[in-house]
Amino acid sequence: MERYYAAACQIDLPNPRTRDEIAPRVKHMLDMVEYAVTGYGPLFDVRLVVFPEFAHAAPIYPDVEHLFQRLAIPIPNEHTDRYVQKARHLGVYIQTGTFLESDARWPGHVFNTTCLIGPDGILSKYRKVHTWTPWELHTSPHDLTGYDQPLYPVAETEIGRIGAAICYDWLFPEAIRQLTLGGAEVLIRVSAYMDPWGTASPMDWWTTVNRCRALENMAYVVASNQASSLKHYPPFSWPGGSMIVDYDGRILTQADPGAGEKIVVGPIDLSALRSERARRSGHAMVANLRTETYKGYHQSIYPPGGADAGPLTLETNQQSFRAARSTTVDANR
Image 1 (cartoon, rainbow, N blue to C red):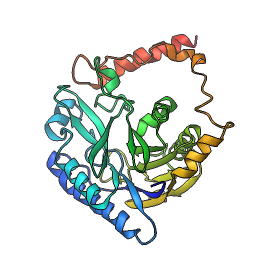
Image 2 (cartoon, rainbow, N blue to C red; image 1 turned 90 degrees about the vertical axis):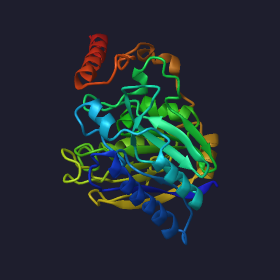
Image 3 (cartoon, rainbow, N blue to C red; image 1 turned 45 degrees about the vertical axis):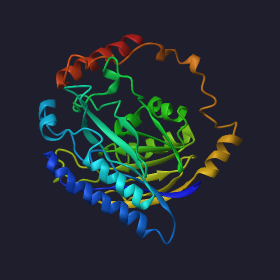
Image 4 (cartoon, rainbow, N blue to C red; image 1 turned 90 degrees about the horizontal axis):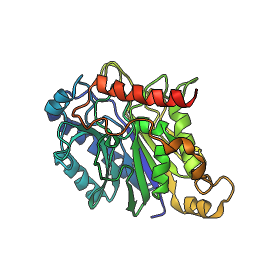
C-alpha cells in the first residue's frame, strides 16, 4: 500500500505509580486505535497509529531500584500481546508509547522502549539512545559495553520502511540520520516534550525540529506528543501538538496546542516520496553527505560504557556529562 493515512494519538491520563495501573491504560489506547481506524474508515485507510512517550509509565522515582520494583516490565509482555491482537484484527501497525523495560541480559538497568507492532507481532524495538540527563535514570544502549543489538532499527513493512526514535533523540540530527541511512521512509517521534520548548512561540522547538528532520532526511514524520496536564504528571505538563509532516517539511496536520487527548490523521504518500527521492539532485541532502569532512565525529564525546558499573544515578549521569562537556569545551579553545 503506497498511500494511506497515519494517526498521531496524544493522551491525558494519570501518572501510573505501579505496574498494575498499566493494563487500563493499554485498554484506553486500544480503544483509540479502534476509533482511529473504524471512525475514519468510510473516508480513507488508517494503517499506522502512533502513541507518545511515557504512555505506559514514566521514570517518576528518584532511583532505579524503585523503577524496577514498581514499573519496569520485560518485552514482550501481556500488553504487547494485546497490541498484536488489535493490529491483526484491524490490519494496522501500532507504534506503542514507551514502556520502562527490564531485560534479564542487563540486570540492574531499565530502558525507555517503544515497539513497532504489526499483524505478525513485534517488528522492531527501539531503546532511547539520548536519555534526557541527568533526570532520566533509564539506560542508553550506548552506555553498555558489549551491547550488540541494532541501536537504530528500521522495519520493512507493507506500508513502507519505518524507523522510530524517542523525544530528546530528535534534538540530534545524527540520530535520525541513522534511521534514514538504514532506509527509513517514515520517521516516528514518540515524545513527551514540554513547554517552553514545545508548540508555543517564541521557542516552538517541537514544531521546528519535526519539520527540519523531515526535510533534511526527505522523509515523512509522524510525531505523537504527550498531552498530560499538570495534575496528572507533576512537575511537568505537556502541550500535545501531535503532527504529521511531509518530506518537504510541510505540516499536513497538527493537533491544537493544549487540546488534551486527541487523534489527528494525515496522509502518507510513499509513491510521491519515492518518486522525489529518485528524481532530485538538488536538495537531496542524504546523497550529498560528505562524511569524510565531519572530523569532529572521529572522537568520542559522551563517554561509552558509563553504565557498566551498574544502575545509573543522578550523580553518575552528571559525571558522564561533565566528561563530555570538558571534551567539547577543550576542543573549542
